[in-house]
Each structure stands twice: as structure tokens, then as C-alpha cells.
Image (cartoon, rainbow, N blue to C red; front, side):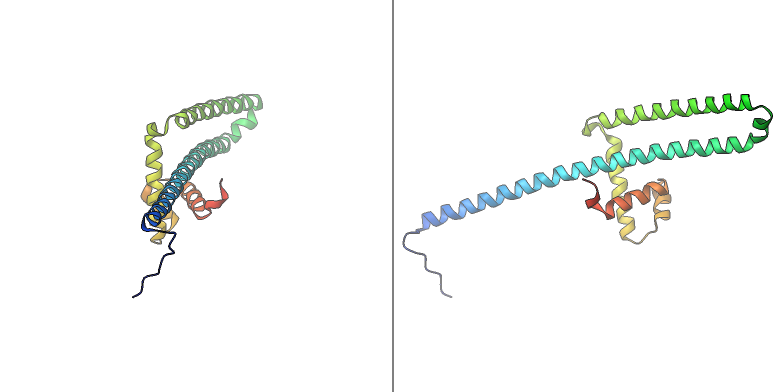
Length: 170
């Protein structure tokens, strides 16, 4: 095996310095790349937490709306007999829903404003997302995943959709 001859103006010391500089640039480049990946991962985790929180709020509102529909169906006869009382009851129910929604929104905002190291529940959500993705890779249906993780099916479907289209959120 023949060695490549170096030109005379490049001695071993110059070559060594040049090689060290290339290594330093490569290490710095990898470090910067790693830092950007960590930042991007934190943004994605926060986006998932926000989406999960919004989904939980939407689920709560939907459940309240379904309860109101059931109440309206059950009280249809009473409402036709006394329209003024029915309007007062509907207004009272709307007030209760508004109070519950505002209370839930305050709780969510307080949780999101906490420092990341205080967000114990956020790390649990990340763990759930990891479990959900693992189960999906294993071919488990979303309904079964929701059952196993004790998470609403709509939330599972949303998380799977967000994970399958990572470029859709910035």
C-alpha cells in the first residue's frame, strides 16, 4: 500500500493543526445540531400538551352539551307547559356551563404557565404519547389504544394524526 505524498509546504505539524480544526468544526456543528433538535423537541412537546389540553377542554364542553341535550329532551313536556320557566332554566344552565368552562380554562392556563420542570403531568402526557405510538407501530387499533391508556378515543386519533403529519405544525 502506498501512502499519498504530501506537498512540501504541508508538514506534519500543519497537517495536524488542519485536522484538529476540521474536528473542532465538526464537533461544534454536531453540538449546534443537537441543540436545535432539543429545542424543536421541546416545541413539539409543548404543542402536544397544548393540543391535549384543548382536546380535554373540547371534550368537557361536548359532554356538557350532551348533558344539556338530554336534559332538554327529558324536560320538553315541562318546557311547552311553561315557556318562561324553561327560558330561565336554560339561562341558568348556560351560566353553569360558562362558569365551569371559565374555571377549566383558568386551570389550564395556570398549568401551561408553570415552568417545564414543574409540569409533572406534561411528562406523563409525553409518556402516554410514546406508549400510544409504540402500540400503533405494533398494529393496535386506536380504539384498543384508547382503552389500554384510559384516554378518550378522539384524543388518541388527534395525537396519531399530529404524529403522522409532523410538518403541519410550526
